[in-house]
Image (cartoon, rainbow, N blue to C red):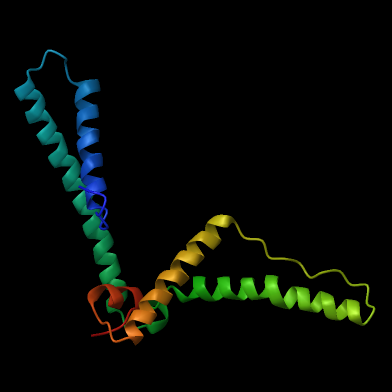
Length: 157
């Protein structure tokens, strides 16, 4: 699989092949012939690929079930994450400093309201969700209604 493998399946296939070769190198007897090693690698690869397919199928079933439910709140862009991140961003960047500034203008000795600190992983995930959703909504507004856009935005055909 090449550099243009946007599905990620190439990297999964490469990983499965590497795992099979690693198992053969570490656990099977070195006296095996090349034909036996190839047969063992094929069997191990088939077992691992079946497990990966089962996991991917389960993940797909969950996503399809989420998109087919009637509750708009839960199927559109993970709203709680988006709204909570936006609220914390506004509090930390606008409301809190504004309160402290207004208090200082009127001579009050109050301290800056507490900053709501979240781990960097939250902000990375939040930025990914908001960015992906924004791109999907922009494409949806331009009239693009393919399956990818529908999956991103939770829209209907």
